[in-house]
Length: 323
Length: 301
Image (cartoon, rainbow over the protein chains, first blue to last red):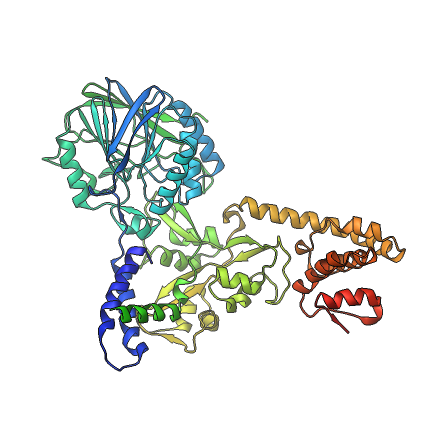
């Protein structure tokens, strides 16, 4: 049971304990406890990771590569002039040796990026997350903003990032970094999944609500430059001719979003594209970076993507592991 | 309020935790094109009739086509490696939630619950999923649904320490993977510590197999220094019971020959810890050895 649910049980049952009825303890408390436990099981919800009222980041200045980042409140800010390149990666699915090797190769291909966003699905345990995120951030010239996806438990994700920070890696929790303010673009983050059934860690995973997402979209619509959303789950898209993804993550009028970077609902990465500040909400995915195979047969090579923002226009370039 | 809280804490402390005592070990997979629940059960368990375990773990209430790229959790048995001092009882208590489940753990591994485990022994740990009764359900019907074997109802009853043969609506029960044989290629890789223990067991067994005959010969010829030299580096905790006792007994006796009473006491205590009640025959050993043995807490017959 989570701490939140446990407190709920404690309060519910404690409220039943004030009576001075002479019935045996078991007879009085037993049914109340059972009912409270049942209630706690049904009301458990994942962590709200896209809410606007979460803890704030500690103020700091981070010098990483050629850039100085200012971190305060819920934002990471990079001053200066563009262009700016954002590496995007997702869905390592764990720390198998082939996947770690592929992440290393993809990191090399992302060398020109100014920032990398990991959209989640990078591992289940703290050890897996430290390995996958650590491979990406090892001596990297850019900071990584890591969103928890459908695989990560909030506890493991938080602990892995804390451990990596302690070792000098520039990795930040996408639950706390809600906004990336870049020259010519603002990126808002929406970690987690919209339903507990889609979270491997269930109530210990990261979730969003439709209201949280709407608030993010509304705030982002008013931002200057390109308006980009980075979400762990996909907006409504077609995969192999079948609809996939979430309606809640699909911007609609009066929301004006230019690009949605999303974790893949299939293995393939989005093809090269370009666009501008037009509110078209173009959905782009880096595909999967998972190099492990469960079944024999052909597989999709691990991939990532690079979004380059120049003025009010953007360009998307998929990056595929050459091996 | 405070009285209520105190009573609550007492009730929580005393309440049975059967359903929460053991979480299933799972691997998380992506559904591939053409996968079905039956095929996944066949792939992981070698038996498509065991798909119910995957359905329950993923809260899938009715069989349905799977969506490509959907994530699913597949409960699997896990390989563990014993550490010094582990017994089936201690492992069942820490990993299965109750020492009384030691018989299941031992049976699944083809041993008896009182088998004396050497450190570094690989064991299979069964998984268990929690079944919540949707209405009144008999254990026989549950055994039929999960195992395809109604006679396994008794296993469900004993695993959950029940004194009844049916569940009421809302009652939960642990369903262990009693007849589920997970394909070895699906086990997660073992960690470095377990690997090291297995390697130490292999090396210790090899060392003991070579050293014991020579040490026996050296003891008979009165070459106690050689006995010590041959056996001192062997960690008996990583040996099967028979060789472990022989190593520590020979080493302890050789230590006594050099008047090293304290080291001999420690060596003899290894034997007594490993097999309480182990007795030396009075006629086989000198009074000096028997005196140290007795001081260590050993029995003489």
